[in-house]
Length: 330
Image (tube, rainbow, N blue to C red):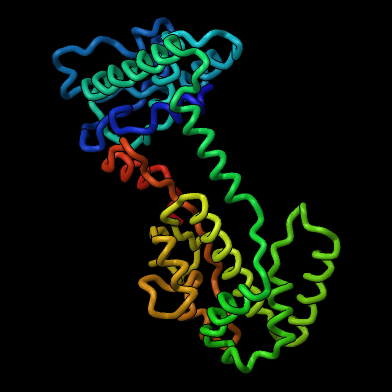
């Protein structure tokens, strides 16, 4: 219930405090938390005239835990307005970053807008009980996209040879494509096949034998980079088919790609980088790097994370704020 309602209310900027609003804030003390449990009004007191400068009251960890336990104590209870109001209050207190500064007046104004959305949603359901609410349709669409991303991508040998091998041969430790033995290229295709719980035993044995052959020929680094290139290419293809437009580049603790980590790149540009070196973004992972030119090269791993595309009716400013605050940067 909590996740569904959060998905319903997090779609627009009007559902939360404005990103342009700011003031100092503080957490509730234990004494205030204990007093806040006495009544809903204590948690969200009426706004006095001084609320324009009064920091927004944030719930203590104990109060957050108590409210969540109370909401989850009876999952089969009907979703009344009062319960939905409590859920929205909990969601804001739980998910709003601690350094997001708001005044009490700003929070109360945002709370009114949130509760108005609750009233609207419940009224829609009462008017047409059999129709799926908008948030449920959005959640189902999101689940369908996630399923597309989880589904395996069956790369053919021809696609591997025309997309992955030329990209791999741009790395300084690799020879030109024409100088790679056809058997080595075939083994790279087989060994880089992603092994999952659903993989068949023949696929597992084939990948293992190909990997052993490559290691024996000194292709250790080539296999690691090839597997990373293939995984990112396949994810880009699946993300594009699922309707995503951008991905975030995650580089972990790698110093070579430090400037690249956390950057958002177009999926179309990232795919174009596999065709030639004139794309606006580098290969992921990049072919030119300090770690690739070492005597014993060890290229850092690069992961990609698809980013939600704002939909019709979304507030662009709020969508940008969400992407900045709720996504992992590295």
